[in-house]
Image (cartoon, rainbow, N blue to C red; front, side):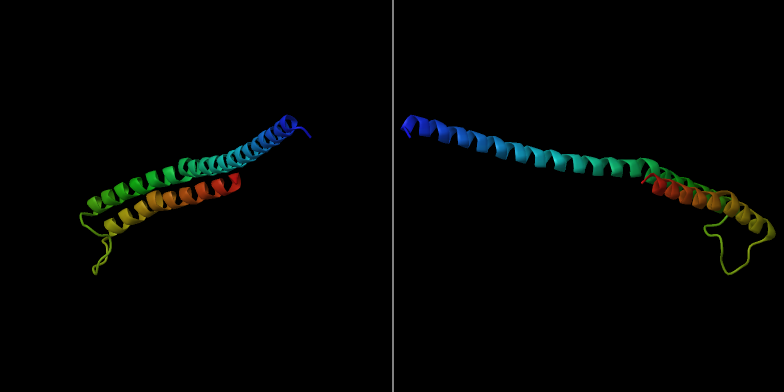
Length: 117
């Protein structure tokens, strides 16, 4: 085989090999990018649909509990002395209206997210 033909053949093989390696690396990089993007979307969805509302419920629950303590006129709910009848009614109302609502809402949101998987 003549030297110029051999040189052209080698150059063509090197170019083809270079294209193949570049193609494979690009394909692997794109697949990795797609996986990372899918994970990011999943985490963003979790933050939007679950943790955002839960954080709001946490702040709202703290505020209503401090309102309860203010209504009771103390820094705690239970102590060594029992609650008066009015304080007990206030506590039971707060428990039914606020605390149980927040807990059931959090459970429903968690179940909803599990169904979306």
